[in-house]
Image (tube, rainbow, N blue to C red):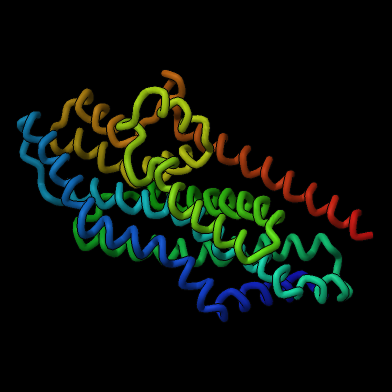
Length: 300
């Protein structure tokens, strides 16, 4: 059996299961409603208060550009992982239903099954993320487009790496799950706490010093930081060049909203965040591959 058939089978199985599709979309939908109804006004007020202290009149397109950039970077930062955990549940469902035994009996290498689950989950998650991204770009364009081409490319690359991080993490964890109860428990846990520990719901700079240091050790924090930078780089630059904001004020805004992040007092560059996330993906994939090799030997 060809690997492409297995990948297509997994993708079709996901979209045929309405429960999996809905559970994948629940977190993004809740975040959109939460941001639009509550958090958007909070961030607009915070930005306006900061502007009043500087004494500079700012056009609404800059405020909207900054706030919507922050909101959609948060949305993608969370969805890239939570959707991966939902789309990868097919791996566990096949164990629960016994379908995995039929697949293992078929003339297909065990490594192909593992690869097919990974690629299918990554593909499904990327499709959902791209849809969210396009919707975000449309909303931002309607309220004042400030992004440049290189920012859009950076966001796309960041989203791809984030999706691989989420897929590698969920694949490794789901490898050990064998029951419906375990699936529900892990899904609930990830959906409820990941947004907080990656700095998507609330800037990490607003936490205590000890908690900031702890969260700076988690790779998800760097994924959020990359997306923040991609969405906000051009906005901050234009606040300085077009609105006349002093560099000190722009830096303060960047620090308060996690666009500039620090690791034990040292400033983290976007390249460093990319390296941290990429190395994490490689390590998780290595673990996932080793787990499947060991499982194949046990089966033999």
